Image (cartoon, rainbow, N blue to C red; front, side, top):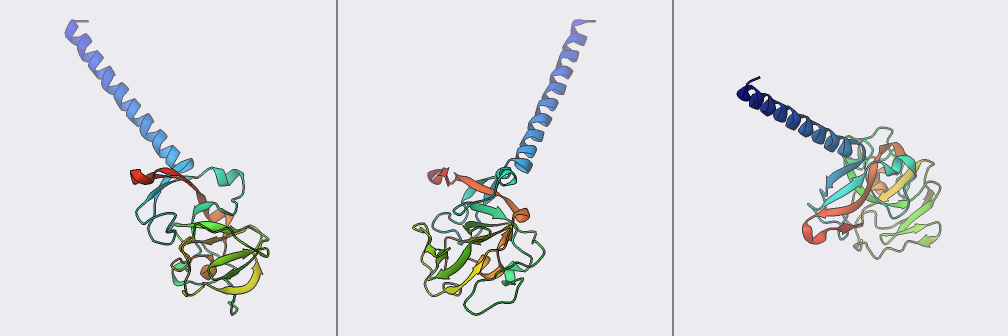
Length: 204
């Protein structure tokens, strides 16, 4: 083999190696996003002041498959179909939050905080959640004011396998008060950190 042929073979080998490295890296990145960690952009003011519009968070897609979410967790999930129109899956009673979602999930993503677990008894007074007879510790919320859903004092029990979600901006959040708690199978994962903008990087 001549020196020129050796150089050509070496160059070809380097190109093939680079292509393989790029393909593997891309595959790993896509796999991580699909099964482990997914970035998510905050689309609305429903989680103010905790999360601002346009802020980016990282979502752990794996954790909720091995354990149940807990009160205080911030979750990304599919809401029930009809959530954008505040459609409830059960008859509404005066002074009570929606007790069940519609039976189909929507293809959009929402982000809210868990305020009620399966079996919890929930009511809302002045935007504050009363859970099993005790008011939540909620220094993180924006005050509700007089918006619809600020006071729903008639208690109800969260259905088995469902989680009750509310935005931290209680007066400007479409959440479980209006379209019901969310079944576990619709939960994408828990938001655990913010990575943009730089001055708001941190853990949630």
